[in-house]
Length: 256
Image 1 (cartoon, one colour):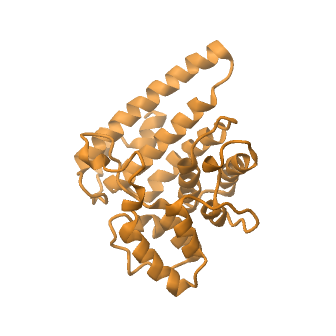
Image 2 (cartoon, one colour):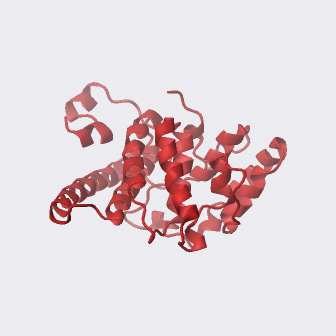
């Protein structure tokens, strides 16, 4: 069994002998669709790795874009596997691969606030080891200390998730609104999170993934990872919004 087989699934023989019952978590699509998406990204990752080997031989080092491209592809694998209904523990080694690539992808040309938020949020939800967490935060602080445009830098929400009470930067509306909720007492925050999730999808109309469920491919589920990370950090009672279709409840409540 190859490395990617270990990450993305067992052999056909093993699946036949012991295939757990999966319950699809995402709206709009079924298990067959997500399996097809996973097969596609599995193939893309293999191609990228081979291309990167050739690039390394020719140039002696990798470009930051190549590392970030792989990091994002692994995140898409995670999203599709979660949407399909796979066990959370299976996502951890995939995220580790994403972190390894992400941590090597820094450059002064970096553009990508959403990726910063995804990485810190998924790190919290998947309970990554301290070494991986430090790789994520080190990259984020590089963005903070750099000369890149402010819109790509960490904001109040990311600093909150990192436990950083010193640094401040007002973020865009969806993220600053969520940050404001983190400053409320627990009971008020729980009610505010419930209301926030009701409008979460509409707040992201400008995002490239918005309405991807209307396409034949490219939909990996709509998941408010950052909201779940806030809930986990604040130890909020999520019983009033656990059934919201955008809330990844299982990412907050799972056992190692």
